[in-house]
Length: 384
Image (cartoon, rainbow, N blue to C red; front, side, top):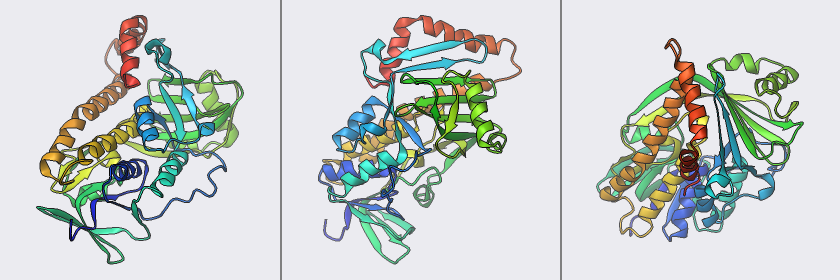
């Protein structure tokens, strides 16, 4: 590898980029991680992070295998999920139906990130911070990344783990179809009057989707996908809490804010390809999905696990046939999840079609009564 600074250079030190760097380092590959600013975890125990993720059992095993699973004291457990339609439809899922411990675990972004970065420190990953990439060039045998401070990095493979607005994707000429949903996800965390019982609750209202996700203790995280985020954010704290509690039928009693509400636009991003010469994309750089199923980060972690598995023993980390194998390996799972989430969004927001509310709610009730089908859905969700 004379003349190469690393086997793989990764742009973006978020959850997916850091997990990929750690997995590759554990496999003995030379890895450089480029992150503009090293995260500061000195005040991690203060307050609650509004960015939370529902991590599947399969991805918990992936992170535990890397030695990067966060402290249990800040984890919530989804043992059961209740879904309510907009006209009486209901379905519930229970991990015990498939012999599982949980459907998912709710973890705050900064606690997941802290666990990953703590492991990075001792794994031999070369972390470069304080500057941004300004150019990316590839040739038949290498990728060359130039940083804003003049440093140049030559590697067998460059990976874009730099989010939905990926700079790497743009530099590699990988065009993406972007379809805005017209909604924003409003997020906030609450202390609740009643115990949540390790149950995730979701309501399709016809013009929005509200989810309460169980966090550690008597806390829940809310994701409200709505066409009118400004109307929610403009309310005072008391009015906001009352509206959220009322929207959920006061199932957990009164709510009080423990993190400031924020909103982010929802988009469906589908690149035509996620690999190019000496370049691969992972996580949100490669795909986004509607958050109604909470699967965005899970798809990203599986991108990292798949790519790391292919590279681990490869002679050339950026070999074109290897990259094509990665793209094929991930296409089915990503496409299936995008179609599922997009289809559910359109089904529960469809208007003007006679009988559509009856159809979607009857479908929920029917599926709820088909125990074998529900069991298979649960088994798929938890990675069996």
